[in-house]
Image: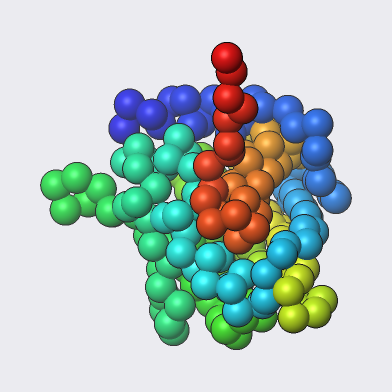
Length: 183
């Protein structure tokens, strides 16, 4: 739980130069990103549902993305295991069409403790045998103290970091950014 204040601060205050907030108001927020990856839809899907390999540990309650899982079954869960038998249900799995579409509902981070919730969709479309396009949307609505509009850039910033990690995992086999060698 020591990381939670850092997670909340980044989630609420960060500003992204690559903002893709397509709509923002006091009661709603819509975020959309589209990325092309160097993989078949099947490979992109396998990476997507292995969330513990691409989600950043800094944006977990336990401090380790290895504690995350997405269960692609009816009533499935995007859950995180916590110490002493605890858990966090980040989102509920509500639609699965393997290699094509995953829809989750709920609120990430500080949204969990407010009246705000959303629908997060990952849609995968094959471009050819070696390339796929992933369209990510997160539509959030409901009550959030001070309104949802002002937090749009911060929410987007955190999500862009995660989507970049997913893209690296699909394209290179590792979500980690390669650091240049200095001599």
